[in-house]
Image (tube, rainbow, N blue to C red; front, side, top):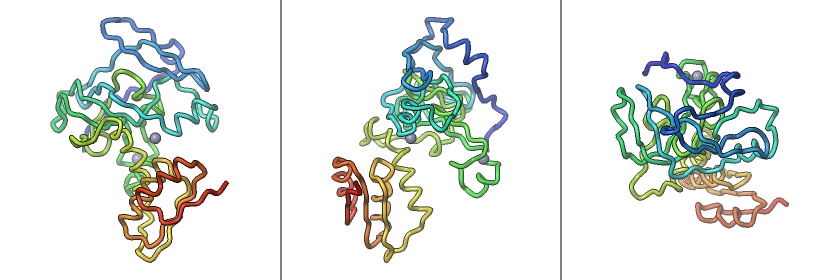
Length: 247
Ligand SMILES: [Zn+2]
Ligand SMILES: [Zn+2]
């Protein structure tokens, strides 16, 4: 499929502890580095290079995921603090393209996240890429994400970790491809039938994606439960039939 021997850059403990000092200022970019709960610092770090199989994207929009909030508020699930720029819901312009890249060009407007399953473990072989045992994930585990002026996609797999935005889609809308896609994927996996009744708990972006896909699947009754007034209101548009406030 592609060369998995490409050296995936994971930060080592010593690199982390020596911080992100930029040696060459002509190649610096601003980046919001996560140091731990309620500790995000704007720092200059070295701008990434595309590498043979990758691209560099100039960030135009980067959404804040619920996961980012968890990490910001607490030491989430006791996971180790990784001093990286978070941000995995990113959209921007391709500004550098690796020599081996055929299907992405300079200037392409893209949604991109450096999400890369191994395609080899037993979960990948079942198509459960998001549960890959060797998953690499920018802005989450070991790699800088989109809360920076530029971000790097080390290995491009078109329509998996890089999607070209239609002309009619803004960068801000493009950032929602990931959370909405999770909702769509959940419904596709559930494989609902038209006479099913479906209940969606929570109508943030993931839940709204689920409601939209349930409607598209012709499910006869879609119920949504949500405590936020704004989100209950939002659930009407994609077609929730019954919307309740569980509070
Ligand atoms: Zn997310
Ligand atoms: Zn895998």
